[in-house]
Each structure stands twice: as structure tokens, then as C-alpha cells.
Length: 214
Image (tube, rainbow, N blue to C red; front, side, top):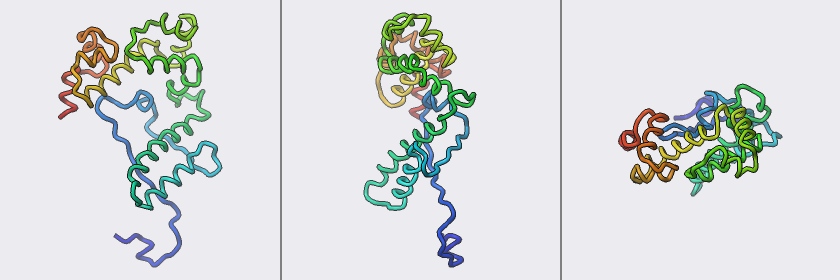
């Protein structure tokens, strides 16, 4: 369908171009960080910003217009990069703002950031707060205080939620038996895993897998 400028014979370029896109998150909920973001983030892509957002928007727009071979793959990656840059730009200067997710503010604390890295690298390990503190060369009290102050929950509570996020992904995307999924996310007992999964996702692992597969 011809646009308004074509119908009117206008030759001036449009005042604005809108690029629209979206992400779908699979059943089981989005990543913990995305789940804590507010419904609307407004970020300026003004030229001269040091965060690289404006060049990324320009590159994405150029790929959309070009329709060259491989553009679909490039556009997919650029949209992911743009999302990360937009969230990063939005969080700049919000470290003390109530609108900034606690997970992002926590990443600015080196103790919490290191603890999160270790938990994400080895989610199946039989962690205790004492063991995690020893890994980070901290006292148990210091780790527990800093972690709770930044994220509003203790290390083991966070670890449980992260394990259940990983378990939902495995149940959704693989045919791995439930007991093997349990072991991969740190549970020796399938019963204990099922109880923890149901507490987070409000249904048993087998029910979750059947529902998302449908």
C-alpha cells in the first residue's frame, strides 16, 4: 500500500522512522533480570552518547532496509545487542533509584557480582553460605549481609530460583528425564527437586513439560 508521502507526491524524507520488534519468552518465565524490569523503559538514542546505542540503532535500520543475504541472521543478533545496550543505558545513573532492579544494582557490588558469577558457573554444586564465602575469601556474615542488602534475599534462596529457571529450560527444550534434570541442577532426590520446582512454578515438573510441549 502506498504511504502518505507517495500519495501526496511529497519528496521530503519522513520526520521519523519506527522500528518495531519483540522478544518471546518461553513458558517458565523470563530471565530473573527481565522479570524485574518495569513495564516501560524509555531510553534516548541521542547521537554522542557513549553507550553505543545510537550506532546500534543505525546499523539495525540499515540492515532492515538492505534486505541483503544474511540480513535475517544479522538483524536477530543486532536486536539482542540492542536490548542489552538499552537496558544498560537505562540503568546508568539509577544505582540509587527504586526503579532499578535489585539484580542490576547488586552487580555493581563486587562481592555480590562475584558470588552471582560463581553460582551461575556451578549451579549444581552443593553450595552452603559458608562454602560460597570460603570460595570468595569472605566471612559468612559479610557475604550474607551484602547479598541480602543488594538483592533482598540470601544466596541460597537466589540459587534455588536460578536452578528452577535452568530446570524449566531443560524440561522445555530437551527430553532429559526428570531425575536427570534434577541432578543437573543440583538435586540428588527427584522428590526434593519436584517439591522445589512446584513451589517456584506452581506445578510439578512432569505437568510443566506436558503443558509446554502442547
